[in-house]
Image: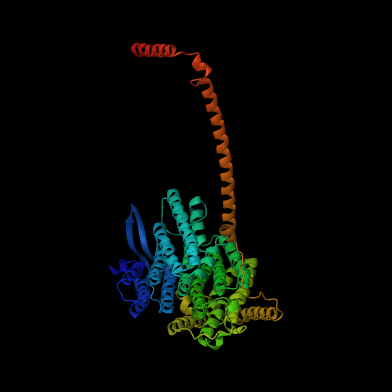
Amino acid sequence: MFDQLPTAYIFFAAAAVLFVLPKGTARSAWMLITPILAAWHIWSLGLGNFAPYTFMGLELEAMRVDKLSRVFILVFCLASFLGNMFSWHLRDTTQQVAALAYAGSAIGAALAGDLLTLFFYWEGTALASVFLIWARGTQGAFATGMRYLIIQIGSGVVLIAGVALFYQETGVIEFDRMTLGSLGTWLIFLSFGIKCAFPLMHNWLQDSYPAATITGTVVLSAFTTKLAVYALARGFAGTEILIYIGVVMTLFPIFFAEIENDLRRVLAYSLNNQLGFMVVGVGIGTEMALNGTASHAFAHILYKALLFMSVGAVMFRTGTSKASELGGLYRTMPLTAVFCLIGAASISAFPFFSGFVTKSLTLSAVAKEHYQYVWLALVFASAGVLSHSGIKIPFFTFFAHDSGKRPAEAPRHMLIAMGITSFLCIFIGVFPNTLYALLPYEVAYENYTFDHVLGQMQLLCFALLAFAVLYRIGQHPPEIRAINLDSDVTYRKWAPSVLGLLVMFTAIFWMKFIGLVRGKIERMIGFLHHSHGPDGARAASWPSGAMVLNIALLLGFALIVIYVS
């Protein structure tokens, strides 16, 4: 029976158990045990289809374990473990339950063998994750959480509409590869795109992640967007439009990240940038490209979590994540600074770090398919990543101008979480075949060739030189307190203003229309009263006796008609 238990239920059961455990070490330890148990469960099952069930006459599949889903499930369990370790100090039941339910929903969605099961878990991720934002306890966090929830639930509404149309068109509900040939598949594609933060649908990410709690942001960075990447890889691999969507995703966040002062927002834009590489891999759709997408998602979850952890640890000690208010913290937070540098090296794809051995698979797949301009755009985006995440995050946090702050080093449990994540980032970079063995397809690729290492080091060194020169001559965007406008201004500021004006003009028009109609009716009533009222000319010329006689004649005529018929 244990092999028929959906892995997601382990997290849900663990969340329920939290309510009976005393706050403190017992709960924190239970939070660590849960993802370990789930990872062991998914690994011991092997590959195959498990936990079938029937719902409303439909044969559904709660667990489909293959190499594509398994690699995502394992990294989801790993991310849950690391996030729970980082949040060991928490005594907030809401955040702890939400973290387990969120991870369980993401894992359940990644294991779904049909679109209906996917929908239920898809909405579960939205409902669970929003509490990690609301737990911040501020009015701004509440408003942000509401916007986040509307968008995420809206994604689910679009998904279920697409599923209904797809089932009507095809008669099947299995979650497998689809083509964009109908309204149903387009709606499903759009739903995945919302969660994946496609261009013009991305602002929920930069809006919500920095608004979450310190530990909640680490958890949020792991699941929602990578679940969307998995869904695209499962359902729309080889869809060419994804190549160009992915290219745009890699490019535009660079410029926003460069001018952003809030370092957690910088990392949110960087996350959007990294998703673009994965989306391009899905669009290419070859075995090498899909391996690149899966491996990059695996590595990205780790090094992005590490960067959010390091900035979160600084925020935990100083109360701010603004670059303009930080600097010089390496003096009192040296271990956090080292871990941040490891995360920066990993996301920048330095040799012997995880990003180097995962991103190169996608770039090689793009080159192999002769998308020259796409390859050039990705190379440019790689240099941009080094600038805004590889340099900006550690430099302005730990090494730039001295802020005068002398906070204590991060708590021990945070250092342990960052240390484990740093070890994994280096281990994958040094021994990539360990990760390659988990990928959906066999990998025959050599990373550490002279040409590859030399080319990457040239790119990185010239990007470092460009940053140094711009910074020295004062042309690098300054770190100042400011509000940077993104496309979300259209629905957060402009749309409400336009709607307010529209409501005002509509109200004015309606009042004028009502006044005009009322005047017409009053004049008509006055005319009728004048002609037919008690004192009217018509009333005077029709005595009461004549009216009674007319009524009697009409009644008699009606009786005759009834009798004859």
